Structures are given as C-alpha cells and as structure tokens.
Length: 264
Image 1 (cartoon, rainbow, N blue to C red):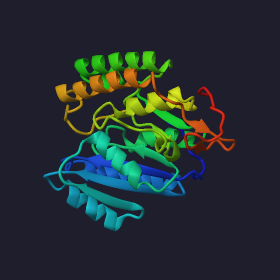
Image 2 (tube, rainbow, N blue to C red):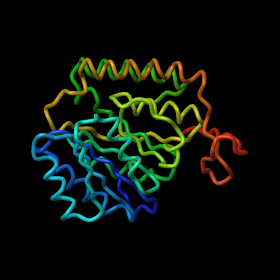
Image 3 (cartoon, helix red, strand yellow):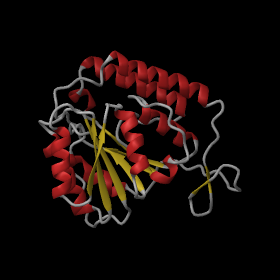
Image 4 (cartoon, helix red, strand yellow):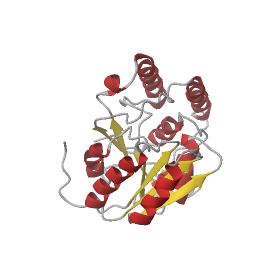
C-alpha cells in the first residue's frame, strides 16, 4: 500500500452517509477518522443518518461527541445517496470533498494512496481492480456496461464512474447536479471532464462490509438510465466551466480562458 509521509496541507471534507448500518457504522467511522486524523492537517467528517430506523443515528451522535472534527446531519425521511451527497457538499466548509459510504464499501485502509494524490489534479478518481471479486456477476455486468457507456459520452477511458472521487468543492458549486440517485457521480464526472478538468486515477482495494445488495435494484438501474438520458440531452447545451489565471472557477459571463488538461 502507498504510504503518505507527510500530513496533507489541502483541507478535505469527508461525507459519510448511512442507512440502517448499526452493525458496522461505528467501526467504519472510527477507521476513517483514525486514517484521516493521522494524514490530513485540516479536515472535517460529516456523518449523515439518512432516515435510519435502527441505532445508526444514535451511534453517529456518540461518535461526534467523542471524536474531534465530526458532526452529524439527521435526515427525516430518507432522501437517498445522491441527495445525501449534495446535502453534504452544501454543508461542507473545506476545499476538497469526498464521500465514503457508511457500510465500508471503500475501506479506510484504501485511503492513503487517494489522500496522497489530493491537490495533484482537480479530481482524484479511485477505481477498484478487485471489482469483479466484490460484486455479483449481475452487478459487475451492469457496472462495466455503465462504465463503457459513460466513456463514450465523456470521450475518456476511465476505469470506473460510480466510485467515490475527490472533487474540488469550488468546482462542484459551478455545476448543476440533476440526479439524486445512484448515477449522480457519473453525472458529476462527465460534466467536469467535458469542462476539461484535470484528473488522476488511483487503484485501490474495495470491500463490502455489509451483505446488502441495494446497489443492484431495478430502481437504481432506472436511476442510472435516467441519468444517462439526461446527460445525452445536456451535453448538447452544456457550457464548460470557465477558469482564470489562478485555476479558480469564474462565474458564467466573466472573462476567462477554458482550461483543457488531461490526467497525469
């Protein structure tokens, strides 16, 4: 595993939503906090209880009272993963944003190589070489088909679109995210990539800490399909984000030159 030899100077908000994960959420959050606290100087962890009916929310409140730089948002009722992400981005205070699922799908042990790349590009995109091992055949087929289609739309050759990228918060504020369901990360990536934003991909090990298979549900597949259709329509009208000399996004209508950079 890649080692981080110094504390990251960039500031990062981690968004951790969970729904009825009382069996695993405490260990997942403690593991995230331990890695992040050791390797990032300025950070915050936003825990989102997305309408849980078990003890997930109570566990989150206790962790926030015990561990520094953690706060909790309680949703009533459940609003879904994509909407939780947007809520977390709205509440975030720091420069970079990353979501980590409360079921431990991306274990904290995989964070160091991702943290190491923060600040080297606008987007840090983790992908899992062991994806076939951790997904059922049906879910793997849907995932690979989705990636292929999104690559056609974006004009890139990414390994994975539905993972947990690190984004600059300023860039997220410059785009409109229309999907609140399963396909929201794909929408964000395509829009930022079409704007010429720089990116780096990082191979990491994925795991599934729960036995849930909620990702492979017809309603999630319908969400992805809806997102792809919206993107196809949107790309005909999408205006790339404009950036100035300091690589900061400018409001539409300002004088700027569109930046076009590829991954390192």
